[in-house]
Image 1 (cartoon, rainbow, N blue to C red):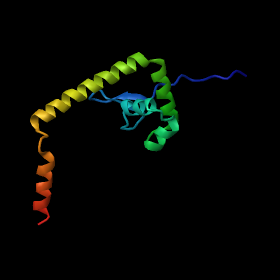
Image 2 (cartoon, one colour; image 1 turned 180 degrees about the vertical axis):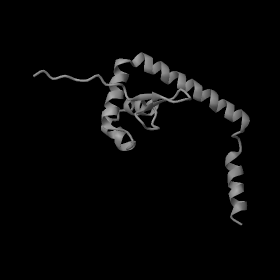
Image 3 (cartoon, rainbow, N blue to C red; image 1 turned 45 degrees about the horizontal axis):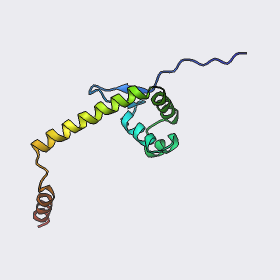
Image 4 (cartoon, helix red, strand yellow; image 1 turned 90 degrees about the horizontal axis):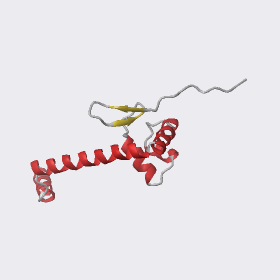
Length: 111
């Protein structure tokens, strides 16, 4: 009897904001690939993010290894978007002096 394997879909979904998430979780592709790139094993990634399924993490890593240029391009776009958002936020909310303002607020609320 021959062993047969049904085709499996890659456990990645793209949400309405264009963010790729793993399985049915809120964990992003960025998070899993960053952990893997820093040397974490699939098991360690699942320990850190228990909502993930071990088989899904292995599948995502395999997808990354097979499609590295495309995944890296996606990750670069996400970094660029994050930088734009960070700059917009800094323009709207000046971070200078924030520590002092928060400490001052804390002192006044403790009274």
